[in-house]
Image (cartoon, rainbow, N blue to C red; front, top):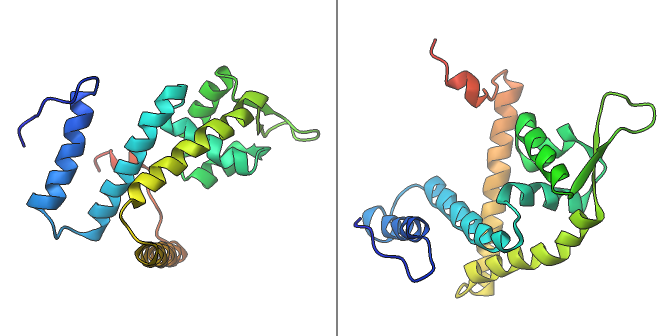
Length: 189
């Protein structure tokens, strides 16, 4: 694909990334695997939300943690890592930055000197009112032109796939398989 000039005020790299995704699905590989389509859709959702979050100087990574904490704060770093599906070192790094930004505080509870519990600050709580509408807007844009019946079928199908894959993973883990870390996979034997 030849690079095209971006519209005024837009990033050429971001614009051409979006065009490359569209071209892949419309021309190059219209029958590519479902996993690739879902990954690209996820990427498009992420990029659309990142564009909007940038107006508030919030990263997508911080959004994931804020979203989880808006539902339940006062959790440990490990609980937060599990909730958002990220490794603890990644969560730790993000929390340090979020604490510097004034979104969260880490505190120990009485009688527990080892674990830090993560709490939203007033500033972190106030972001919910500003940022959630951005995610809702992205969802509306993505669903534009998809009727309610089709959306219900899509949602049911995707939830079923999540369940199928979660059950497959649980069976694999029960059989003694494990999810290796990226770091361990990067080492040659």
